[in-house]
Amino acid sequence: AGSAATHLASSASSWTSSDVAVAAARPAAAAAASNRRRACPVMVAMQPKEAGEIPSGLKYLPEDAQERALKASGKFEKLKIEKDGSAMWTEIHELAALLKAGETKWEDLDVDDMDMRLKWAGLFHRRKRTPGRFMMRLKVPNGILNSSQLRFLADCISPYGADGCADITTRMNIQLRGIVTEDAAAICDGLYDIGLTSFQAGMDSVRNMVGSPIAGIDPHEMVDTRALCTELNDMITNFRKGNPELTNLPRKFNICVSGSRDDFAHTHINDIGLVPMAAADGEIGFNVVVGGMFSIKRNVEAVPMDAWLTQAQVTPFCKALLEVFRDQGDRKVRQKTRLMYMIDQWGADGLRDRVAKQMGGVKLAPAVVPGPEYDTPWPRRDIQGVHAQKQEGLSWVGLNVPAGRLTADDFSTMADVADRYSGGEMRVTVEQNVIFPNVANDQVAALLAEPLVAKYPATPGPLAAGLVSCTGAQFCGIALIETKNRAMELVKVLESQLEIPLMVRMHWTGCPNSCAQVQVADIGLMGCPAKKDGKAVEGVKIFLGGSIGEGAELGEEVAKGIPADFEDLVPAMTKILVERFGATVRA
Ligand code: SRM
Ligand code: SF4
Image (tube, rainbow, N blue to C red; front, side, top):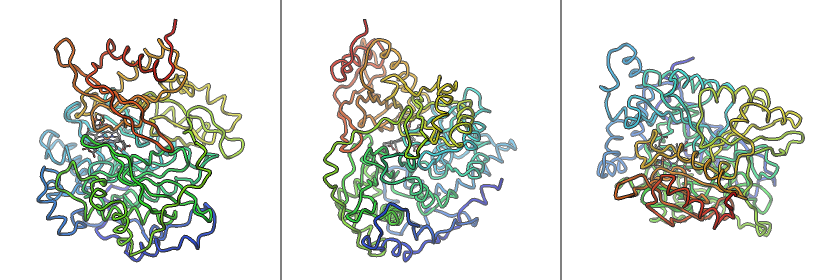
């Protein structure tokens, strides 16, 4: 295995604005009426940048943006100017070497590096809950993993015993837990060698690329999102080597590519959501929605941009929009720096015009208005269980992983199951579940008889099926309440007491950041302070009415300050499930 230093980017980008212009200028009319992917000229022109001097994201920030950053309130912008997070891609090796040689202790390392800058390498120090140990967030474009990768992930966490575990995240991604600084550099190298990375998974970078979990196997898909997610991930991360051009955005950034009318990727809650849509000549491209976000201060759906992109325009468009956001985005008050605040100022049209200019002055096609076929409702499908693929004789099998928590042994077992039944492939979903694709129909029964399925069922109960939970207080320092374990226990209690006719999507999130997206849930539970018998206790706010898929709407808060113990929660949830979801109390 090469050292991570050999994976690092040199300072200059190999992209030019004329590449972008060429890519973007291809007239939609010239495109054949088909859904075939065409090579994106920008990506063809771009080659991975090789080792060189350590780059700095600051280099790519125009002077006026640097000046604005220096005037920002709060410590973040100054910290980034002082030393760019991309520096940690090499420094992690030096830190690991010093620690291994016993020349320093983690407690003596620079606090800003430990607690902040290492996030640019995907390493989140859990100082408050598990001091000295990191959560390591990966990038898994489109949620697709192979069995070698799964075995590597098992090997990463198994040395940590009870301290090592992992989670499937709400962005179809994996987070490893228990990592110590001494091991982190070798894990970064190992991830690169097996086709993954953790670089740019945190702080002011673009998060994991979300696509359709059943891309390429879905009989109803409009476009296969896999290649686009990989292409975008390569653009964002410089082919996983790290891309300092995009490390100093004003804030985090989410992009997703949807593949069908089900909108499994949740376009309405991403900064850029790409909604598949056929043009008049039948070519499948994307209508663009922008600015969706959840935060403590503001929760909003994305708004339409009135732009339709060919598949070849997607990456140049996203690159240009990220550059506009990086160079012109407000940095003054961190809580008001997400893309939607730019849209407040310029309007979605104003943003589109600036992006088109950044792309070399191209004229983007207007958004395609959906035809009459969209008048027929398209309820979002449940992808757990066994489903026929578009390929004859093959099925996918979706298994339910309660709250997305995995162990090292789970990764190993999943790798074995993938090798036996699904050509070595396994996918993870934004609902924190897993999918084994391409299972021969005559092998499905054998897969369903595997011990893994006894643990993670293909036909879960109605509440387990829809359970999503953020990390919560077990590991997250911001959490107001414990979530995952409580959520799993509550599901068991309610399923034993109630007959529930439908799957109910219950999302738990430990604080108003809403990492588990309570606003999209049928029932959302968000941590908040509460009082019981005059004492402060952990509590929840309740959200109802969120919907997903086509025409999705955000749910709203209906109650707050409910104590999060079962004495209060079980009757509160029972009432909601009976009154709104047709549940009956078992005799
Ligand atoms: Fe999140 C911060 C976990 C998806 C909004 N999020 C955090 C941190 C890093 C806080 C921290 O340092 O402890 C959490 C790490 C806890 C840990 O140890 O795991 C954290 N977020 C998560 C994950 C793991 C939740 C999960 O259990 O699945 C998700 C990781 C996704 C990934 O793979 O990258 C996760 N976070 C989300 C989402 C959902 C989404 O992307 O669809 C959101 C809302 C959507 C959005 O971003 O608009 C979300 N997380 C936040 C925010 C609020 C952002 C804002 O604009 O204010 C924060 C706080 C921040 O960034 O300052 C945050
Ligand atoms: Fe932590 Fe809050 Fe996100 Fe849950 S919602 S992971 S508690 S930041």
